[in-house]
Length: 288
Length: 317
Image (cartoon, rainbow over all chains, first blue to last red; front, side, top):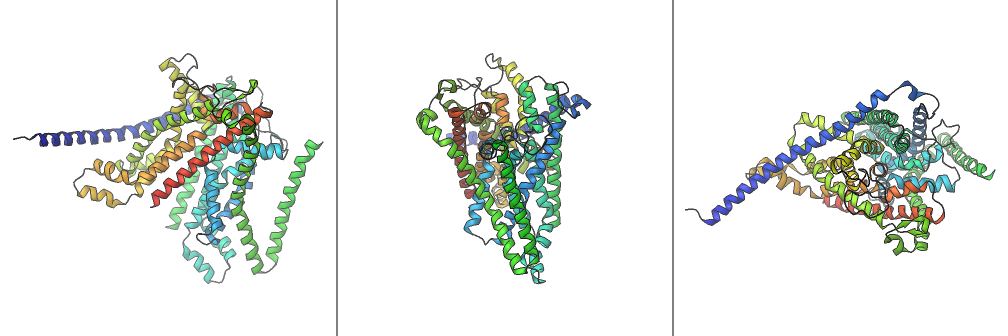
């Protein structure tokens, strides 16, 4: 004889099975949707953009007729190089201090970590405003390559610090002990043994930073400005590729050229990121 | 003359500092080992202080330039004022604060369920080979610059929303469009952080659940996922931080009207958009009010960072 209790139990078991079945379906549906969105996004930009890539886009001088992206491309390379020059030495050295010199639980280390974490979370527009207030206005640099590069250097500093520190920590202690045991000083151990061993990891971080610099827009509009010309010095205003896309789509007149620029930027950034993860992969294999 | 002399002056100082460092380095190389060790230790220490210095400088410059304006406008009229009309001396950023919160909530609503389920798929439902394809795809999504997302939103999602909902006032540039786009943008963050959290749960949870007779799905959803709760929380908070701070993509699809939106098909303006749109031509109090907007944004971000570190602490315990 069936009691009401067992009926209820049966219903609950049934309900639970249904829920699990639904969850299973949801998991697969969500994964496919994510894949679909990614494929559509990249595919759409590529399909619409590639036919619009023409030789005139690479003309030396930007005019409203050819809408050349060449100056923006050169500016992007310049700003990237300048920012890295400014951010890599302090970033790597800071990581060396945190990983190799500081004792655990050191107060300064804790403060430096909190600072780096805070910097990581700050939105790029806030960096842009800060760069504008400090470099453009207070130091009177004006909208310039240099102001943009300094702003971006501050922005990627925590990224370089973190990836370098991780790379240094993945170097086995036996390397350090061997070096010290052979009579090398701490400094020599760092420069001759630990840093080269962590090289691929550090490089991966630097390349990741390049990707962020190349893709950045908001931090540059009010620091490097939007002039679409080749710069004559580090004090001239210059737009990068990302700013170029924003300006074009804002004006709304050159949508085809904006597509083409977006393709170039997308391919550039994706290649840079792929290179970075390739380098990181080499590091983990080397340390195994 | 002075406007030109100043940058050259500062640049010269920078150059002198660089040369001084170089000379010190050469001296260090020539002199004894002991001195060299000490000197470079000092250099490393100084480098470690750079990030602290940067945070202090950012706080200093934003607060010095932004806080006086809040005082001048009146904190309540600035934060709770509902009309932003710089021409008439009205500086209320409530529409922008609400705008930022609305699109962030929308992004979480779209992005978190999708991202979390995808993370569960990547961690527990897909084979090694499929994972080898899916994982680079997610990092691909993470690498796309926000201006490209914005452009995609502008040329694909805005017309799509216009077509589907026939919004006549804003032509498809709306809170809904911005939320959807931000939801896609935070996907990679949500997926990768949640997946790491799920994978960090000891296998024993899963095996124990199986031993008690649970199916795979039941073990994953009712034993493993609850154990990864704080990691998932951290992922959500990171997503909130990313979408509240996002600028370019939102500007391109949100419509940017400085009014409180009545429904999801209305356009809105976020705090970030407010800064970028008007900074180019603003002067005096208007300009300072924009910097104050970024101070408010900065405070929001600090709060989110604090919550994030709390969630992370929960994870390690």
